[in-house]
Length: 174
Image 1: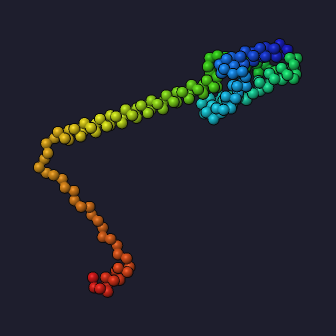
Image 2: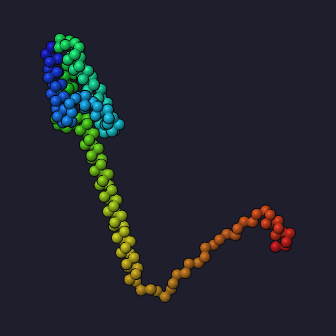
Image 3: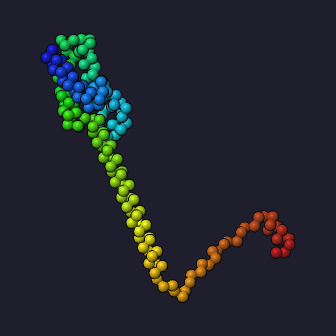
């Protein structure tokens, strides 16, 4: 157990140092966890393993704190699965496949997709405006015909009379 705990602490320190450098922070894994908490909604939207990664990181930080401050290296608090997960997480960090990187990539891709969609819509509007302008020019170039269109008055239904108006008309003979 002692060797596993020492290996775990060495790997944890390496991951912690990498995160401190990457995020310009003095807190490493704690800063990463804080970033995950701040981006929880977006993270869960873009990263399928967000919740599990968050929970595991909190557990590994707790194990690190226990080993450093409470139980010492001779305890059996760390398991092989913890070390393996931390090792996998460190590879994900180095290859930018960790939860925060994946979320940022997905968010940037969505932002680019929206911008491209806006550009496409603007191009369609410009093309439509150009077609309208060309049609107006063609209509102005055509000779005027002898027939001119005069709009006819729209049909207006008769207004309904109130009861008192009808009664008045009845007695006045209209």
